[in-house]
Length: 407
Length: 147
Ligand SMILES: Cc1cc2nc3c(=O)[nH]c(=O)nc-3n(C[C@H](O)[C@H](O)[C@H](O)COP(=O)(O)O)c2cc1C
Ligand code: FES
Image (cartoon, rainbow over all chains, first blue to last red):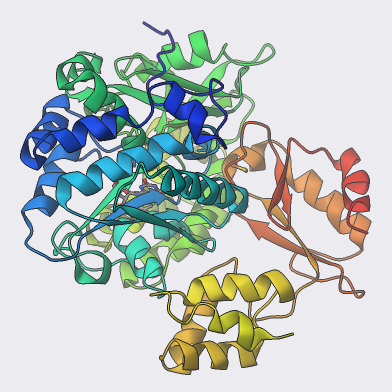
């Protein structure tokens, strides 16, 4: 273990991303051909059996989701790729799209065949205009080659809104509206884009599909943690020697990622905390570093795997300063549709600023905890529900940092 | 500028108003009132709704901005890597503060959240082009490319 295993990034550095022939030369589009030789149900069953779960944060069984869309009766269905990649500290979807765009396109086309959709959209964040260019070229080449058959893909560019990573907000945005999440149910596989059955999957999820079809469900299911098989791409930031990315089996532990792959903490500093899964993730103390990164193992310690961002802080860092900044992020990114999130993120940010300025008291901590609990179950979408996590987890594990600033 | 022509190109794109706004902004750096009124007409929605879309997204602006838009990432990884010093250097070099535009209309300074280039922090972008791992000392040279 603690070895890199490249499945999603299998072609990284091995192909010319702007030349489809180099992808085809390495076996590209064989999986789509194979998939189209299977019946739709059998194909979906294969994906289900592989145990592949979504890599965008919620960890839903991919084949199961496809089955919902397959069974939904409709003339028109859609396949949507979530390339909004908004979690701070995350750039794994960019790596996939810039270095191997055809893998994503092939994965989407396989999904299109499975559920009976002939139109796909890639919603790429506005921060990545240069990725949009790569995607458009790759799609044009795939169409020219005729590999996609009657499946078509269009790229839509976001415009700087974190909430648009939430799948129903993303759908609203493709429809040309404000990116505000919808009430669920109905879920997108029943009623999604333009009210039609829609699959929304993450870039990394789609990039896994061709390999699974090629090598089989059994092969995939045997990799990593049985309940969340396969690999995960991690991006390492903060106080870490190797500020780069790694793809590892999902049974790798946090400690292995930080110390073996990440090369540990720079200088003579000691580890203080790590936040995994992006800015909405929990801060994890030293005592929990032997947790495997797999979805359920992380959930068991009150943390998340999320996007796979790994943000490390050394012992010189002030947790309250960092969490105050994060609270500012959520205040800014809250879309304002539901009151608990709109007001809650604002109050949280104000309380954190008060504490950071040395003007907070014990009562303010108690208020933050209560507010956080209420938000976690009353907010409309995952943004507001997860926003208190960094605050609550640091009050729990790093109380001394708060105490040092209280009146 | 022929904003009508630009918007008209997206007329038949379902939900194409955001794409149309992007295209106008590429030319103008912002979305003037007449663009929003025109978009409402083309995409067949109330002006209030077209305005609502324009003001929802942080990369769209209804206020005039400079020709070159400099964004500084303030997300946590960039924050602890010294984004504040880079901001100070940019403000000093341009003689404006965050959120402002230089009087010659050449540069605007904006905050952004993570732009997905965190392999080397802190990060700024100019017109979308990322500069990762920047130090205050490099700012003058980077700006010179756009002066
Ligand atoms: C606030 C918020 C932001 C999200 N951002 C992203 C994102 O940037 N990329 C992503 O794939 N999923 C994101 N998600 C999760 C999506 O809603 C959805 O679960 C995912 O796209 C499903 O794909 P998957 O099953 O392949 O993971 C976000 C969710 C929330 C609540
Ligand atoms: S955190 Fe600044 S670019 Fe990602």
